[in-house]
Image (cartoon, each protein chain N blue to C red):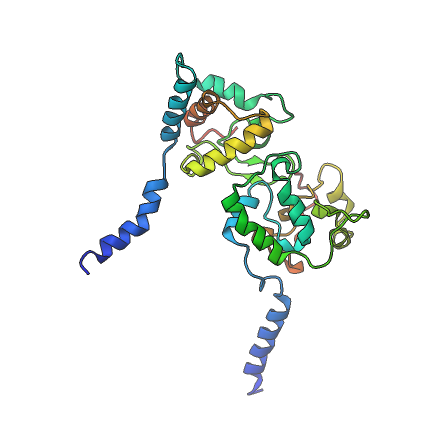
Length: 157
Length: 139
């Protein structure tokens, strides 16, 4: 029992470092959050592969129907950031073209297949782009399982 | 070293004081532009700005689609559901203080709503209305 304290602390530290894999990631660069986190939460680079990000950046003038252009000087470091943090597994469609929508990727659909129906359709449905509706720390780029809180039944959005 | 602290303060405050502007500065600039574009420019109209803001201008969305009919309240992006901080300066003192930001968002959102760049007259009308909105009004 006398040696327990440091063992306990070591255990807590170990547990935290394992369960905090999400929060140990480098924070999203402020410029990225500024430019790509105004209309939607700043999606972390790891959500799409490099080819998908290239395709997204190539079409910012008609980004899902809206003008999301960023001036060249501001965009350059954001491009580097996305390349460096991009998903290594491919996020391509069946015809091998890069997917633009995160919600269409295989990994996203797999991760969200247990989302209850009431949040997928009907009056309480969550907009698929609204990560923060359930992932409380989405704004900081953290999607850790322990930070998920599904909206309550009476909540309508 | 006597000037070290004032120098440090000047360095720290310099960019802020140089960059930060007030909504009225933007209104004055839009007025200059509008006068250049049309010598018979007769000032801005908050009423016209309100109509422009709250009605569709050729596209599927109006400004209000995301910013709300009375933008002293919090808006919500029509597609993503993301919270949009109030646009009226009285409700959000950060609005209309940074030229780069004002320019960026007028460019983007005018393309979305009007399908072209907004004229100085249109921007000034909207700003005149936004500046006239009292902070308390939320609906």
